[in-house]
Image 1: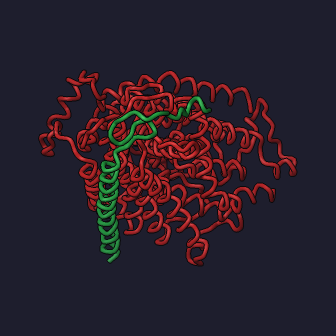
Image 2: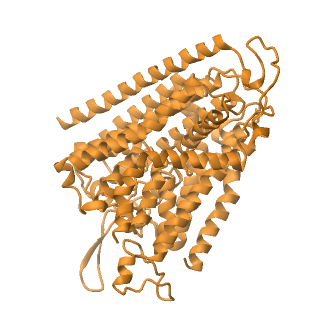
Image 3: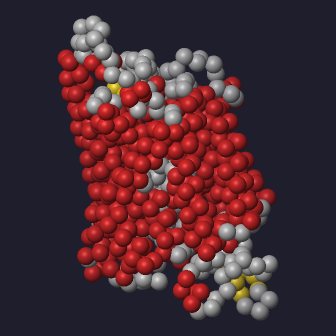
Length: 63
Length: 573
């Protein structure tokens, strides 16, 4: 009886882990799609169309 | 501390600093570096061993996996490993190499032990020489020592590839990484170390008990077994599960002071070397050196703290006029629970190493340390096993902390955080949070429940603050896949075997999955060249920030529990 309980517990845990993998997959996929729509890289001084912005903040020098 | 203690620490640091970069470079060649197609050293020899394995298992070594396939391979392999080990333990009474005629291991103990070894925790609810056959030790535990360590290193290789690659959909092949790690790294190192250990008197035979008559005329049973081969991978793979019940305190596992030094070095070598592997694989060795420096700084502070506290001795014993001073006749300091051949400094140095690496082997009883000395061992694990952490998983944890630090630095100045030229965005940060929360959730949850349950409290051998420390230590060790025991708490009960088994599972797989998801997400990104606005991640300033983040995350999570345990106990002395 004990064997059944512990084997069932481990099967349930690994099934939960597989579900966790799928959940993380959806998380990564959804947000990466959102990033592709946005496209802009204002930190580096470029807008969404790849044009150079007027000024670029400089983290190192501010320090 | 005595001069000998300082010399031991300096020698250990020097040895690691000299050899870790060499091993790190070799391991980077084993895992492969983007843009470097040269074969790894020894490719012809090791390739001849690996190719039949691939053919037998139907593995195409050229075929890579997406992160999800990689993660499912890790899970599938671990599930199969559990089934095999559980069966060996349950049926050992009917299997060969059982000179003591041990029967099958109880269900809950088999569950705990199997989980413990597939997760690289190697917690010992069993007494090796009183519970397990030689077959269980060799085909069960030792095999898992190799492959569970290799699985952790494989996941690390996948994470580094995710950070290093650009616009890629795959992060390597788990089966290839597992095989190459075992064949090219762990087996050769273990073979050499086992020979060194045997030369120092660590036993390696297939005997059962040898009956001898002592000088007093009494009869004593001396245990035997294939210990050296298991101890070698136990230290190199940061596993920690001992062949004998008292682990590395046993003279047949850890025979001499020199042997103790070698084993301590073996505990630290691979985890520290992997920092250099990282630098090579991302083609920026400064990053590897920075990670190494961060890991080493934390480990050194913890080592010095523990060594100083144990060398100073116990204030309560001073009150009783016990001589705790260093002299030609004794090593001085707090000697309770420590082996005379090691002394307090070597014991404390080992304690800092074993708790910082998720190794978990012990050469002294941490339960008998001074309250703050034991508290350092406890805190070192609570940092998340990143200094330098277990093989592979330690570097994973450190890189998660690095990403978290980059994110916090970005928040401070209002810029999108980036690491190695790749932006850290919402999905990665959500995964980092999942990683950071999983371990404290099971640790504090199960520890709090154990304090409330009368049936769990009967396992305590000490009341008050020390008793709380024992429970905290047990679940900290399990959920961080460390495996060291504080002692003083009887955990071979259904409650502790089961809950600690669950804590080990969560601490392993609920951290590996977000790591691989981050690897997959980062691999797809296109890195941008560094500009004047890029926050450099190889400087002492950034290193200090990461150390601060590691300390603050652990402090905010665990300070209350620590205050009620070791800190109160120290104040009450």
